Image (tube, rainbow, N blue to C red; front, side, top):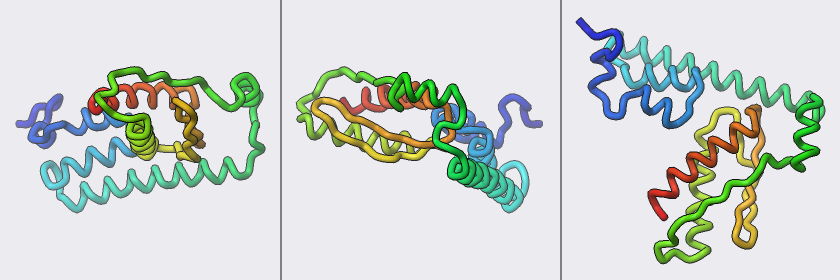
Amino acid sequence: MSNAIKPEHYNRLNPQPKDVIRAWGLNFNLGSAVKYISRAGHKDDIVQDLKKALEFIQFEIDAIEGARAERKDKPKHEDFMDAMLRGLFGGSVGHIEITGKRNGKTDEEIAEIVDKTIKDIISGMAGVELEEIKEGKGYTEVHITGNANPIEVREYIERELKDRLAMVL
């Protein structure tokens, strides 16, 4: 009999789906899709599991498309808090400062690594899209859009950026 806390159909995997879901910061829909794909054919029928994964992926697509349509129909600063935050921060929610050893890398090489890492982080975030990346002298300016809390997005990007850059710098 399978353990309800650590079922066999997940224990065979390394990393386990729950670890991937947490590490990638996936929401319920995408996390459920990962869960069903990873167990496909090991708990229930493979086709049934893949159809369940597809259903959760479709839920996420519908949510993203619905949020995009809603944003197009609404004025840019719909609520007072959003307008106030944009007024206070000029559309910015702070900065992320990364320090570390250069390991012989030039400014251009570091900027390229940072750009690629930021693009990779944002591409994995549901409901957030990269608008543009601007290079400054010693800094990178990132513009994103989406239906997520901008402060939470910045905090998530900061954590991920520091973790990922620690591996290459």
